[in-house]
Amino acid sequence: KPMNNEAGLAMNGIHYKHGVACADCHMPQVTVKGTTFTSHDNVAGSRNIQAACQPCHEDIDLKTLQNEVDTRLAEYNGPNAKKLEKSLAETHLLIAQALKAGAKENQLKGIYQNMRSAQWRWDYLMWQKGGSFHAPYETQKLLATALTQVGDAKTDTLLLLSQLGVKNVQIPDFSRVQ
Image: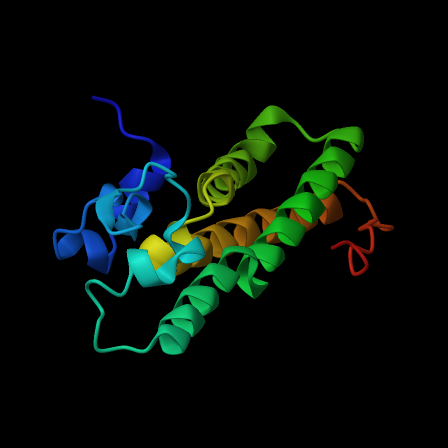
């Protein structure tokens, strides 16, 4: 059976390694008017930490659990993700300048490979929002790899632009983009 990307990434996290299934957190046991049943709300466990997290983490107070969840989820759009996003946009625009200056396919081959790999990692991580929670170390590792790849592509594109005689390289200012 095909697996969605978020579940695939979650398999690299500590919860999966301890046998926690998706439904344990996303469909926790709840009690309403004395009746206990499995919630079919299927929302993020972070919306109901008491039901989703505390059954296993009963020794940790609710506020501490909430802070841990919030910290992990903040990494989803954290500084490395923003840096990667900005570098991808800048490098795509630099490649467009190289093409306009007459760059040939064989000159761009390695640049394209690094861009595709970095872009794929960004797409993979940004498509799902739970990776920074489910597998924070794997998420940061993928981000770091993508940053290296896009950095290599950007450097190689700048070198190519220089070889093509482009002296006035234009990179937009993304500092105000949220």
